[in-house]
Length: 217
Figure (cartoon, rainbow, N blue to C red):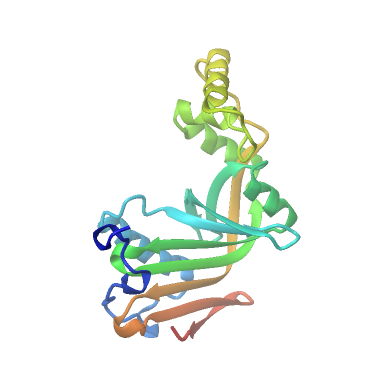
């Protein structure tokens, strides 16, 4: 490999972060209200898929894994996403019902990290959301045995076509599919600053209220 074709040094891949300071007196009284402010900012900045988040789970034996999913709702109770309950994350959460979420909003120099326990949504709530999805996504939920090994792409496509023929209009709600609610115990807001002196403010649940702590970058 000659010098012109070498990849850049990882040590040299760095950016300067500069943004408005994140101060305690500027925070909303609770983390969900603060998240709403920042989420609105991410939407206004026209970030691609601002509701994309990394969900990290762990098995009962402590084996971690992470993947990107889409946030589909949030309120004072917590943060909602939907998945196949038989997927790896579904199995992890059945064994160890805790998760960490990460919103990596790099272009606006912000991150939000959430930790908490996880509970399944009521069946009727998951069913209502499933019926609101595009037809193709509903068939896809049936066609994909998420995280299972498949022999080929053709196998997936044939299963999709078979199910589309079976249910040409209104596929039923799978019993293996539904929503999870992440009930936060900690929510950290990260704002990039110069010289890696970033602002990190963390809400930590203290009974029925929240304590705010500043963390060293």
